Amino acid sequence: MAFILVAEPAAAVAGALRKFLESASHEVTMATDVREALERVRELAPALVLASVTESFDGEALCRQVKEEAPGIPVLLLYLPEEEQPEARASAAGAEACLVGPLKRATVVSCVSLMMQLAQARETVSVVRTEMQLMQHQGPRREPSSSGADLEFLKRLLFMEVKRSRRYRYPISYLLLEPDRYAERIATLAPAQRTSALAEVLRRLSEALRDIDVAVPFAEGRFIVFLPYTPHEGAMVVAERLRQRVKEVESVPGLTASMGLAVFEPSAQKGQAQVSFGSLMKEAGDALRRAQAAGGDRVEGGRQAPAEPVTE
Image (cartoon, rainbow, N blue to C red; front, side, top):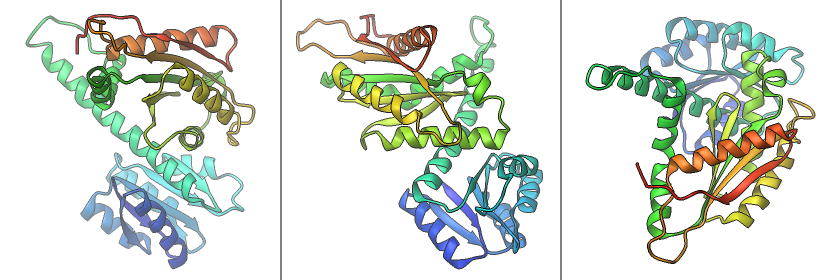
């Protein structure tokens, strides 16, 4: 749950946005003009600001002021359907992302979810990096790395589920997904447009999953899809479904994705070595690289993760 400021003068639109966000368990506060919105930002420090850009409301001016006073607060700008260059305008204003009406609940919630997850990831990575730097003064010296911090972030999210799988002996599957030709097709977009495209990818993935499944951003352009209680056969079905859903992304026509799959199916026999978070992540990464090397738009992997001593 996040505390979100909605800056929108039209009561009907504001009410719809509030309903969308509260249905996703967010707490919402409202503002009807730029002055009031800035007061809310200064007093309440929301986790995210949604601001409309219309003739009667200058959301871009609000965004620039927010970025000047509180640059760490993400801003999502909402444009009318007739706007021809929303991504360029949003990027110039300093917004992290933009959406163009008519707005649907799934689109708004997915974009907000991605923005919040990315913000949390950046904060967590910063904390872990600081911890690693402090550790340099207390033990063997080693250089901190962003990849190490990212791994720590994911361990905090997913370690408990891996632990439950080992204890209660149910199958789990990991999919590591990356859009093909990411550096060429998505990374070169303006920041706001890139965030919107990744939000659409996340929405397409989430729509194709069960309530108990989780899709989260891992690193720039990569997503992890975690499938509890899912053996190899079921994970392959889900992977193929997700592969087709990526092709439906409208903001990047013709987009495809490669996926690496890792599966752990514990045996009922006693004495079997147990899987670790690290082994699953390594296998999914290796399988993803094989899929990319084979030309992309495919799923590789799926064998049971190799047994190794548990180190977590």
